[in-house]
Image (cartoon, rainbow over all chains, first blue to last red; front, side, top):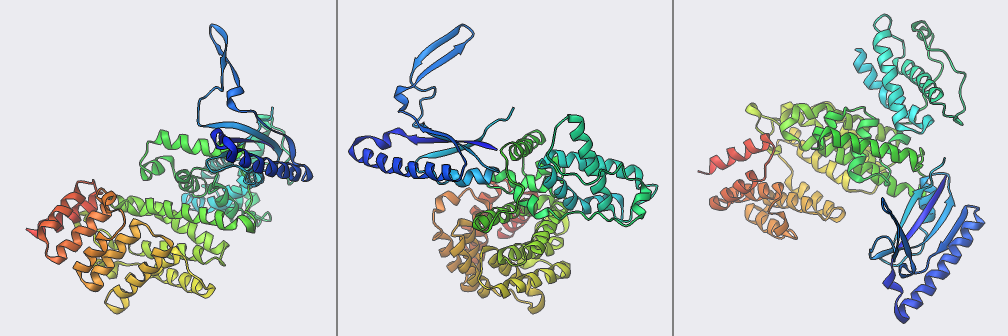
Length: 116
Length: 404
């Protein structure tokens, strides 16, 4: 099965000089993890996203489409990146997801990809 | 054996085997229900020699039919597909053994990816076949809400790819703990419902059975044996828990001749086996506490000093209010009610406990024994204001009446 691993983190965690140092550390861990995923042949896609402030949201209503500055929901935690992996089952996907580096307050959501 | 009883006895094995092969709890339950309906018709003419094998083959064929009807292409490797078994088939000994997949199914229903409060209901529904209305009553929710919760859980298990496997050694501590915690919750539902003692009995019987299955399948884990012992010791006292007029009878006052010796023996055997494995854990300690209370049957006295030591040990594993309040009651028995009240006052976060029934009931009992009539009356009233079940309310009212 394919699983999407969605990474949510408080964006302000990476602000300032100390935050930048943390970011470098986390990025290094991501590179190691994605190398391991590729070696295991499970990685299908993965990327980090630029901050929520760079997002543009298209809203569709009965009246048509409108553009909005910012992400669709103003929450403290933002979607910061994702992996798409192939795993035999949920336990397999969870084992990889547990290895995703996040700062305290971070969350990883594991969602099976729909098969049509 | 009556048809209904034979079906209930076969259910855990058959549904587990179906679910493991189909990887779909709903489909497994449906196929079993269809086989059950067929059994009621066919068995009246001629009962099969092995009801479980008959149900397994019939349900499996029905499940395959359903799959074909739905046009779902499955990668299942099929045994030769037999036509609907006739009663004559069953005169031949069942040569197709039912694979024992109960453990796998229990682990699926208790997967940490399922909400904690749903796991217990799901396990009792899928493995034991408890009805939605009985589960709804036990878990204090509407049938519609219970049905929705179970449906959502079964769908998640299927769609999110929860594996139908017993987890590997690395995941064992977390996963087995989830299974044991689930059974404890399930049993608490059956036990604490004091007003419905008669109604809770078959419900508790399922937990009794399930914990026994687990102890059979995982005999090398002390906590598994401890849980099975705990449930047996607690169930042994069920016949003595209600007095005439439906009043709850506190443990130290129960009529010991009503306690069930068979269950006490089973529990003691399990606890002995657990002791042979070394180490201890919260469920073994709880079972030992129950066992200590039951030893009154042989010695005529409750060994409160032992019970206090066991609560001290339990507090290391479960430093929670429930353990602390029960420990304070034991202190009250060993060192007198004044010491018990001091221990109760020392329970962390007493403020939060004021609206907790066991706390007020314990406080009332200790004040009562200490001769603090005013305080006791206040605590009994506070306990009664917290809507205890009818049996417990009758007991509290009786105690309160004795004060004046």
